[in-house]
Length: 447
Image (cartoon, rainbow, N blue to C red; front, side, top):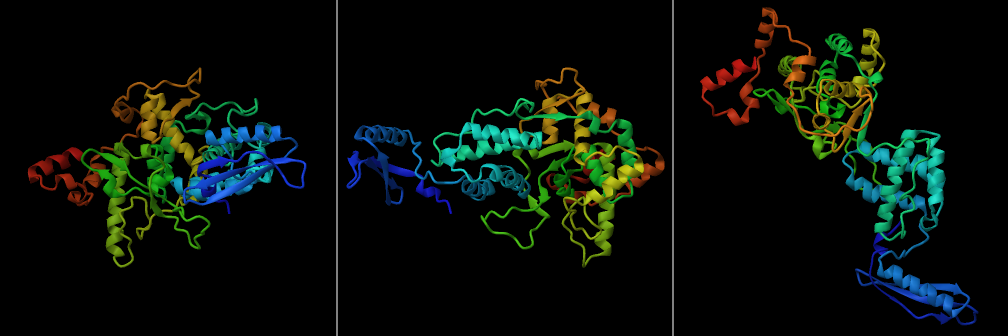
C-alpha cells in the first residue's frame, strides 16, 4: 500500500559525492527526515565521474529546496490512482454517484492504458496518445478523462510523487470541440414544447409518478432532490419550496470497505451549496401538493401500524420514500402511450430550463433556479450560440403566468381544493402565535 506520509519530509541533507569501493563509479547520499523524527537514507549511484555525481547532487539539492523532490520513483500509475480514489476522492465527494463516476473513468479508461507505467516516467506524449485513443470511443468520456487526470496528478505533485503534472497544458484532440468551463449546452431537439408539456401533465395524472413529473418539468428539480422533498419544506403562506436534501446511496467513507446491503434511500447533502435553494411554487403544482397531502393523511390513518410517517411528498401508500430509479418503468410507458418523444427523464429538467430562457429570463437567474454552482447556460435557440453574460435576476411572476398550466376555477374544482384537510399550523412554526383573525386572512389569500 502506498504510504504518502513517507513522501512528506520536513528536513533533508545531501552528502558529498564519493567513489564506491570496488567499483569504478561514484555516488552520493540523500538523508530525509520526516515529521515523526524518523530518517531515510537514499543512495544515488551509477555516475562514471565525480563531476557527474556532483552535478546530479546539485540538481537534487535544488529539487529539495523547491519542495519537488520525489522520494519514491517506483510508484505505478495504477497504484497511485487506486490510492487517490480511496483516500482522497472518497473522503471529499458528496455522494456515491460522484465517487462511482471517478472510479469508472480510472478503472475503465486510464488503468488499462497507462496503469503499468511509473508515475515519474509518464510524459505529455503518453497523455496525448491516451486522449486520442479515448476520443474515438466517446467525446464525453475523453472530457471527463482530462478532468480526472489533471485533478489526480495535481494531488500527486502536492504529495511529492511527481515533480511536474504531465497532463497540464495537454489539449484534447482537434476533433474534440473545446467545451467552455462551467457552460451547459441544451439541445432543444430533446426537450418538449408547451403543447407536449400539457399532454404529459394530463397523461401523468393517475400514475404513481405524477408529482415527480410536475416537480421536474415545472420546477426543474433533480430526481434525487424530488425524492427528498418533505411537506415541511413547503411554505404554505408564500407558496415556496425549500430544497434541503436529496435521497440516494450513502458513500462509505472508510476506504476499502464494502457494505453488504448499501442503503439507497438515505438523506444526503445536496450536490453543491448552490443546490440549496428556495423556489416559487406554481399554482398548478401547489394544488397538486395539497391533493397529495390529503392522500398521505388518508394512508397514514388507514395504516397506522405500518405507515412510515417520514413526511416525504413522493412516497408509497405506506409512506416509504421512492428509490432513485422508481420513475423509470412508468416514465417510458407514459411517453409511449401519450405519443411523446422518447426523451430522457433528465431532459424534462432541460425543458424547464429552456422555457425559462425562451421567456426572457436572465441566464444567471436560471442557473440559480436550477441549482447550478457557477454555470452559464447556452441554448441553441440563440442564433450565435455563444455564452450569455449574466446581469440582474428578474422577477418570476411573468413566467408563472405565461407558461404554467392554468388551474380550473370552476366551483366544483374550487370546492375540491378548499376541502383539503391540512393542519396548517404544523407547517408554519414562525406564525403559531398569531391571532386567529390574521390566520384566517392568510388562509383566504392562499386559496
